[in-house]
Length: 220
Image 1: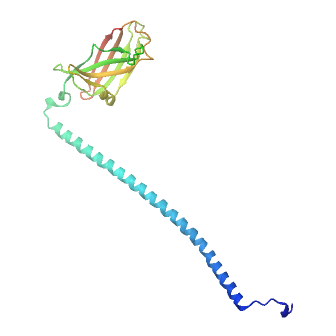
Image 2 (image 1 turned 30 degrees about the vertical axis):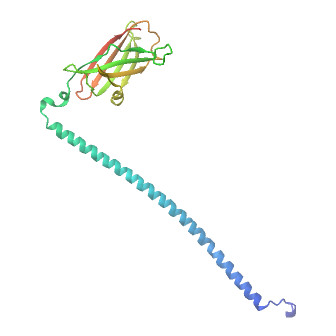
Image 3 (image 1 turned 90 degrees about the horizontal axis):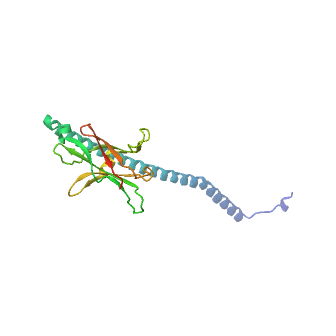
């Protein structure tokens, strides 16, 4: 092709094209940098969140350690106090549980006044050597029997009451102190025509002794 036929570009246009190309190259070179910066910012945020979680967990663990130290100190103090007591006032002699009794008001009750007795309440009193009711700590096993039935069918219901639950049943009035044990018998007792027998086995946690009592509950 002859030189005369070629398109001649002015020098000013060439400079403008060169500047635009340089600008485009600079922008394209910044794109990966911006992407990396965004990724780094996300990583930094995740790291900060993780550090905050670890800090919170560490604070909780420290609180547990402090609580354990406090409880351990209290136990040591109790041991020191008990170890300094005379032999005749240690252990079971801190209170002398003699027996347990079942109160005469124990029975079956219609709590929601619908004509059906769905609750059994048994009043149990731990009694010391002086004849006073005391708030002894332990477990109670309660059994309800129909002694008119054959031995294999006599046991109607059975319930175990652990120490933490037993505390909730403590009941105190002007004339008596006892554990007011309440049980749902809506699916247990089908007939109240015959007298039933409630038996309690109480394990005293302080002395380790086991006490038993039973009482006939008359139909009402």
